[in-house]
Length: 157
Image 1 (cartoon, one colour):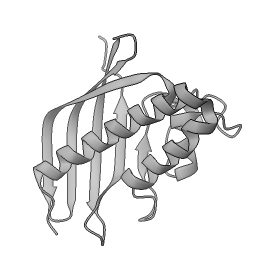
Image 2 (cartoon, one colour; image 1 turned 180 degrees about the vertical axis):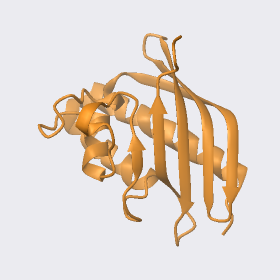
Image 3 (cartoon, rainbow, N blue to C red; image 1 turned 135 degrees about the horizontal axis):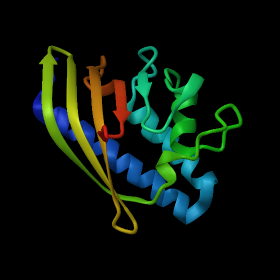
């Protein structure tokens, strides 16, 4: 069950489409609409059923920098969780488009890694670019699951 470059590309697109769906659900129905969409996105894209996901979100800090649990990831994307008071909901920021630019990929059997830039465009046309790494594992059903997600803002010397 080897992973292909096309599968890595499709997985990134699905992740971006999911982020956009969370934003639109929030705009159309507030947090009560966004939370179930975010849960669906997490369950479709991430490998929390395989074990801890090595997730370092862009805008997380301190003791909550790393989010190896589904609960921590959900809070990052939609906020509104007293256990994560600094989370404002990255998925609620009005995203409309996602573009990925590959720097490098590594594929070995059922494990694939991708590194590059993600450009996110919000409803006002503002583009946010982040440095991103995704690690994927193909599960028993042949579906790619994110098991590593590292994101940071570009270094500004």
